[in-house]
Every structure is written in C-alpha cells, then in structure tokens.
Image (cartoon, rainbow, N blue to C red; front, top):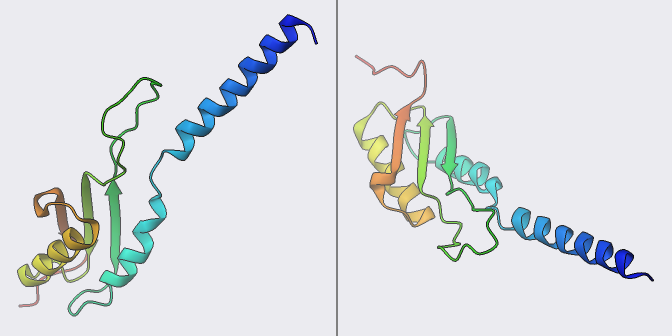
Length: 117
C-alpha cells in the first residue's frame, strides 16, 4: 500500500470514529414515553405530553465540560394540570424520577382542560 493510500485509510477511520463518538454521546430521548405513560396512571391526571430538554453536546473533540446526559428542563402538558394539587404532584414526581430540581419543571394544563365550576 502506498503512503497516500495509508493516509486516506487512516483519515477515513478517524472520521468514522469521530462520527460514532458524537452520535452515541446523545441522550436517549425514548425515556419520554414510558414516563408519560406512568404519569397518566396518577389520580387526577388524564393524557400527558412530555418534553425533556437535554443540554446541547459540543462537537469539539477537546471539550472536557460536563458530559452527563442529565436533563436540564422538562415540560409536562397534562389533562388535570389545571388543579394546583395535580400540578404539584406531577412536578414532584417528575423531579424525583429524573433527579432534577422542581424549578426546572414546567407543568401546564392541556388545551381544552378547563376548571370545573
């Protein structure tokens, strides 16, 4: 094999390695559905939509910052969240399950979910 071919092969292998490193370091976003399903089983809660926000990952090879995939914010949209006690239970449960502070969790009532007179 000629030196140019070896260099091209080496660069190709490094590129594949770098792409694999960047894409496998992303958090698993499939955790949203099982948690939403569990929240729907709570008393006073109907349908639930859940969005978990993860920190952006740097593509820099030299980035030595925190590489955890812990969420930095959560949006919960739920039927029944118009009731303060239900909103509080949802916030408390999500904080406990995801191990994040309650102030990072926003709970909103689902559209069409009106307060009963």
